[in-house]
Length: 112
View 1 (spheres, rainbow, N blue to C red):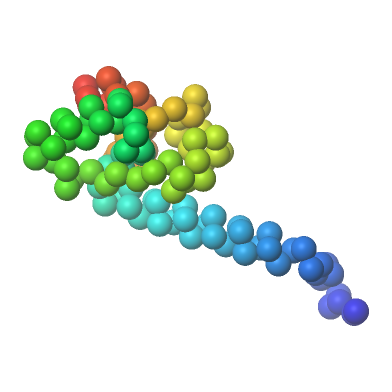
View 2 (cartoon, one colour):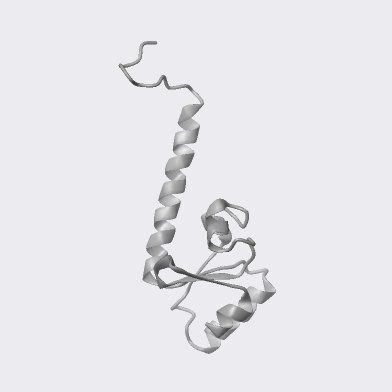
């Protein structure tokens, strides 16, 4: 199989990696667009500390003002993208102000 000058040969295993990279880029773009519009709370329904925040949002009438996402939207709690926001990889985590502010832990989020 001949390659163009300066081009690397493509292997059969490169296609799945390229597709996964494109999915990660699309996911990051979607997360960034959502974060730009309103704050995002990364939480799971089984989290007691997250339930405290969701209850306060409900009582304050702000449940529509915050987007609630699973940490899986960033690849999970141990992913590099999530750890860039919260190095300990814990939840809940509130990302606000267009993604420039990450507030970890339920107590800090309640104070914010």
